[in-house]
Figure 1 (tube, rainbow, N blue to C red):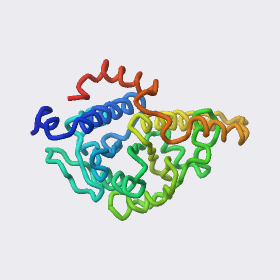
Figure 2: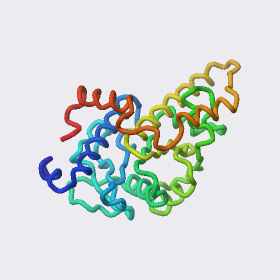
Figure 3: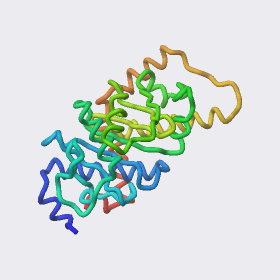
Figure 4: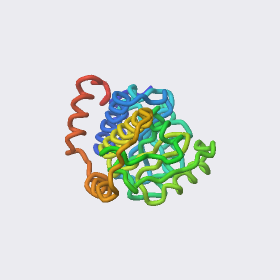
Amino acid sequence: MRTTLNVREQVSEIEWQLRCELAAAHRLVAHFVFVDLTYNHISVRLPDNPSHFLVKPATVFMEQVTASNLVKYDLDGNQVLESPYLAAPSAYNIHGAVLRQRPGIEAVLHTHSPANLAVSAQKHGLLMLTQQAMRFHDRIAYYDYDGDDASKEGAARLASAMGDQWLMILRNHGAVVCGKSIPEVYIQHHFLELACRAQIGALAGNTELVTPARPLCEERARQFGQPGQYDRTSRDWIAGLALVEQHYPGFNK
């Protein structure tokens, strides 16, 4: 098995930085969200070779991801850096398909948490009930789950269904969040998770709900739902990195 030093020696400085950030993002999602064993993953496109991306290995949990065990694939699903690890076909096919069809997308996060699974099973989808939900007003694509997300063909259909949106709820399956950076997909996914949890709780209360007016939702989305609004300087990412360094110090090995 390759050592940390060997992996770092084989990649560029920017790739190593992204490996550390991507490992940190996996740790943060696992810290705050109840995820589905080994089946959820985040990817990032490599700026020095946009046809290559990094993604989680199939045999580790999110909290076990490190800079060195991330695996590198091209957009056609071919592993392009030798490693003792492999990604799951659903991982490299879904992420590869989205990154291929949307050149402006740099990072993709896919989960099935109990909260987004519950919303994905509700016919009305995500309701604009909270300020967290309102940032996604008119910015959500929906995809009817057809049982095939692991094959190249199934992943291509999924990616096409996203259109020009940056968030997609997969009916009866989960969610895909896209962004221009790792910090952005992490932060937006976190707010999606909060919105889904709040919706499930509000609907379970069996009482009349207050729904914000459309202009308020539109303004909230304009302020907080635009691609590119979050990056390494965002306060939530800075705080998140400090948390990872304190609780999960092996992420950057």
